[in-house]
Amino acid sequence: MKKILITGGCGFIGSHLAEKLVSKNYKVTVFDRYNIDNDFGNLENSELKKNIEIKLGDIRDYDSVLDAISGHDTVFHLAALIGIPYSYVSPMGYIKTNVEGTYNVLEASRKKGIKQIVITSTSETYGSAQYVPIDENHPKVGQSPYAATKISADQLALSYYKSFNLPVKIARPFNTYGPRQSARAIIPTVISQIIGGNKFLDLGNLSPTRDLTYVDDTCEGLIQLAKSKKLFGHEVNIGSKTEISVEQLVKKIKKIMKSNIKIKINKKKIRPKLSEVDRLVCDNKKIKKYTKWKPKTNIDTGLRKTIKWIESNKIKFKFKNYNI
View 1 (cartoon, rainbow, N blue to C red):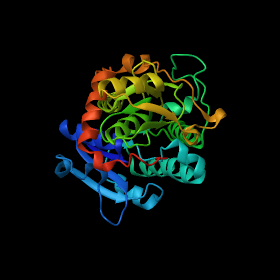
View 2: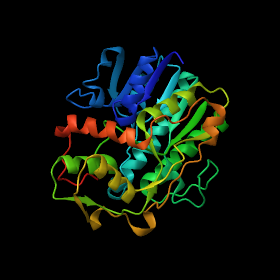
View 3: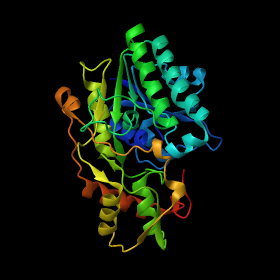
């Protein structure tokens, strides 16, 4: 890896990945969505912004993707629509961004002779666990339009590997959390509502379990995957192999923040019954076998870091609104 492009690099995981790569002395370009304010999202106030080239365009537009990819040898593809509730509202938006956007990255990479492309997937592609821990051979089940588009994008990427020998790797992070994550995710939702002084926690289903990985560990997993010479054409999980329910997670956050706030279930926040992914637990044997990666940040440490960041950036959170 000499010159790296990160699509979606102004987002939650992408911005952390960009900073981490720059700190390791890689040359990094970030590609993110064009906006009239020339706003660089999570990199706007980054101390390392001066060391990152930022290009704005649209992942759905082949021309801007082709232009951004030119001159690079490695692509980390993170650009995507990710909110599951909004995928019920606009399935076509997810198809255009997640499937067509991935096509644009693959085809442009093929035209430009990119040496490797790391496609970022999601554990949601597995659906509710049919066995645990979930390894890469677990069936893929699209229980939401979001998950279906990510399955499609992954399969398209693997087809390019098999059909055109495009050097593709599929990274499949389980639930990543940490500073800069939006309130569409459970952890910043809970933290911001407590900080905001809500009378109660406005939440949905408390029973699903998730495998949580701190964002720095996820980014290191992406980097270690890219460094591997043996994982082209492979799907690789990135997760902690631990399990916590939403209810347990909320109790843990309340304890750390010394809050006695009560929970109120909001039916609008509960997924349709057949769409709810009840259980996700990562089998991370593969990434540990082929790379030097292992998670370093435990849940309590990660939550404290996240709470500290949200407390310092509470103006960014509309804690009284339901973020879909």
